[in-house]
Image 1 (cartoon, rainbow, N blue to C red):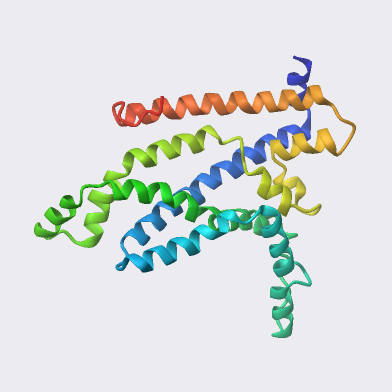
Image 2 (image 1 turned 30 degrees about the vertical axis):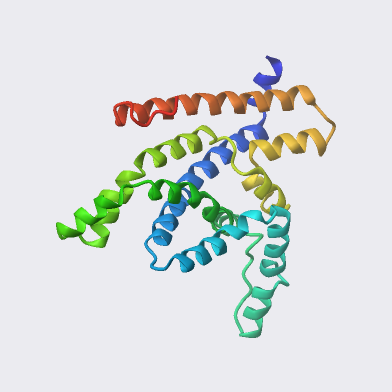
Length: 247
């Protein structure tokens, strides 16, 4: 109990909680819709071979480690990186991509979308494949445009899948992306992107270990995730009259 109380009187811990919540909420806003959009765009393409090519291109980054992605970003976006050297050669001022907290936070969402949306889109593509094709035929006969078919048939057909994926994302809102932030952070922006997982790592391995306190932080995070999962599940069930409840 003393360790749990210590969380709320430690400024760094409270800052980590705030960063975790804000980054996770922004991830849902800026990352959750993109796999859905990508899945619809790929399924709307003509030509089976072309679909496979684009699906492979967008899925491939998922298999790259964040260690590799972090190294690539450092080589491209650092002060002496490729992009800043190109800007300097063209007479422009260099941009501090990795040292500006606002730009760095935006990079978290951009790189996470680039790396993960192709893999996440597979779930939605599978759901779209299960929609009865006669619904599209009937809609075309009735004069529905392609956009109307997407809105009233495709999105309606994968609504349950979207609801379940959103519930899972909300349930994991205290997991703000440890692998990504741990491999991309630096001393300049560390305070603005320190989340609970990186904080636990730092107090466990970066200083004198305090396993009791780090365990309390991990327990606190898990309890909050559990509560959010139940709340999101109940809200989704009420909005859809019980159709989209996960449990």
